[in-house]
Image 1 (tube, rainbow, N blue to C red):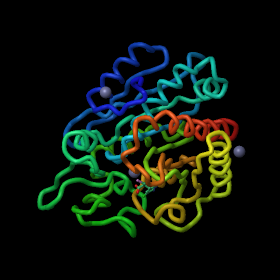
Image 2: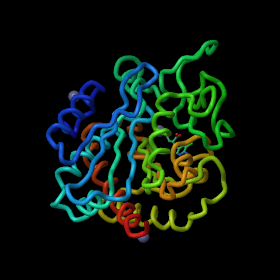
Image 3: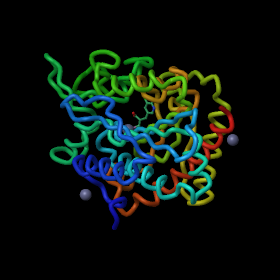
Image 4: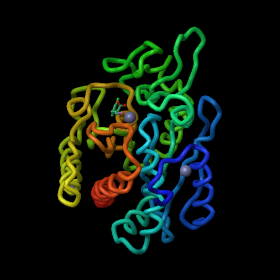
Length: 305
Ligand SMILES: Nc1ncc(C[C@H](C[SeH])C(=O)O)cc1Cl
Ligand SMILES: [Zn+2]
Ligand SMILES: [Zn+2]
Ligand SMILES: [Zn+2]
């Protein structure tokens, strides 16, 4: 199948980032936002239409957890699809003409390489701290949002190790710094994970409802109903704490408390048959159904901000 129906090692993703940006300099710009613990570059693709400069921005990050290979595959597919659909699909055209879209294809670069070279089921990054017997921090427990309360671990050997302090991880501090700088124009945050087929929104660090809980629930229901109608796939929707589990330090909660009032974690396919080892043939159908959800949410945000 095509490039977009296969999983790729990090080097190939970097080459793709370079290639597609050079092919579409009018719509894509590469931004280096920082580097990983092992000094690999963290590239963000800034995707815009060719018309007026939009006043709003949205963010999509992929690959926070390295074993969730479908996640970077989605970010890559999304960028290519958006470029191909611009001026052809009305919803994509509206999206690009109203939003600057910042896409981070592989946030956990070191972990991703490690899943290709050493351990396929690795989740965390590859940071090492003096005196710690184990390697890696869970980047989705390292954000400064209820940091290291119930649902994360202070044990460096745990898969939910929160790190020595909030934003200790270079990958997290790079993303947090970038989003803080853009917080006035940033209206919508997506972080892409697998697996479980869920559309989650704040909070995960507490059972308290977010101030705009009803609006977020309405949006998430609208989006998952669209997926069900067009693709027959079932995605659940709700606050993280009650829909998946109580867990602190996540990027969506942090983005929400920063002021990005539309903040979602999307758990892609499947529900356990293949789990993190989703076959490449399922990349395309997964991306198509999730794009429907993203279009629904984005058009609502454009109308309401
Ligand atoms: N704020 C959050 N939002 C979503 C999740 C679920 C993901 C699923 Se892989 C995780 O465990 O990090 C976890 C947290 Cl802490
Ligand atoms: Zn390849
Ligand atoms: Zn994850
Ligand atoms: Zn709506």
